[in-house]
Image (cartoon, rainbow, N blue to C red):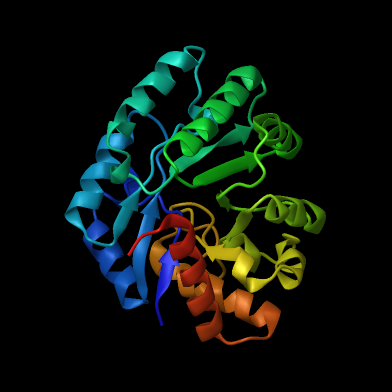
Length: 256
């Protein structure tokens, strides 16, 4: 069986001492592709360097909403400059709106999100959307962009079934990670009612490790644990989850 981790920050410094072993464990578990979302201007170089060292990585370019600063136009200019060669990236991400920590720069976050969504249209790239306490704001921004359909992932989906059906109707799929294994997350009930072809696997490493590693450093080798939980919820085989989620990810990101 082969798996894809569609969202992993393995360039994070917490992996500096054992990244080779982390990659080897991922490959041994069947994870043959790992997609790296960018965070800010400081993460571009370590992310790109990691992708050059190992053949399993693909990179995205984007500004994370919690990295948005008052000088947002300068930040966006820096990130957009890397799109002179859009073939270097498989997506615009990780972008979105996050009002969990603070709403002080809400307008700048919305501006950054909408501008980066427009990049995805201009360069025909899928998007990876981060949403935390901002579902209505994100839907309003998408509505303002006035597109009939979108292509991408709602990363670390944590909404309800109605919200899931809404974003799927818009063309997105749901990124499902370790939270699906948390007993009281509510995500299991959502996954149960969403077609398998509308789900992809992700770890969000080093965060949100699945049970039995909850609270510890997450890594891409745990993807089969997430896949098995989905298989259990849907009463299907692990192989079915592996095959369909891998194909869905390949269809979205157009990687080989």
